[in-house]
Image (cartoon, rainbow, N blue to C red; front, side, top):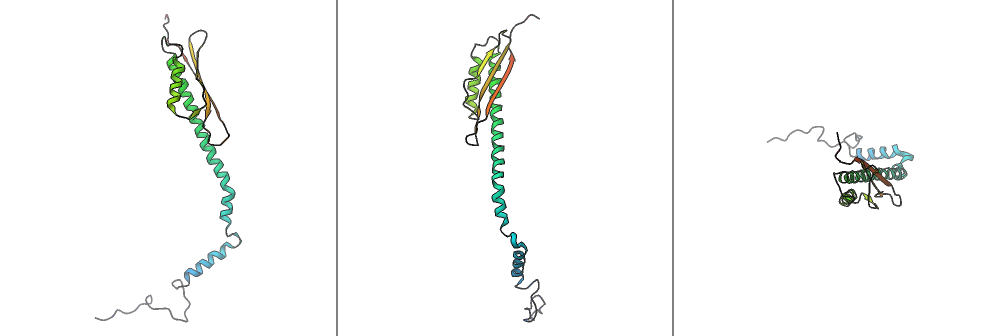
Amino acid sequence: MPRPTRTDRSRPAAADRVAGLRGPGRITAAVRGRLAEGGAERGANPVELAVVMPAILVLLFGSIQLAVWFVARSTALNAAQSGVNAQRAYQAPPGAGRDRATSFLRAAGDWLVDWPAPTCTTNATATEVTCTVTGRSLSVIPGVHFPVRQTAHGPVERWTAG
């Protein structure tokens, strides 16, 4: 069986011929070119990152703290609404709203911390119930406290002449 003929691609380069794009010096030339391009700016990226990283971390922790504060506000408002709904029921006992808001806060987790017993009061005319829940949100940033206060209102259920 005859041998196939050699093509230009399979022939070794002549010693006097300069290695082109396919030669062994291609990688070395590319690396030298890239190193020469950077010049005085070589190594600037880590320095820029070290300067910008504190600002990125402040924005990250600030956004997380803002989200935690909104969840704490939502928890306080839901507890206040739950207390109002329990207190405004027809012939509800005097502490029903406070007890319902307290049990809601205990079941909701620790989004709202340092909350005293919620205050659920009936106004002087006995037609409206107001429940206020206060506390503070969890703190992602040490030493910083964000107060939370939410109030809900509702009419008392009663028989009226119509």
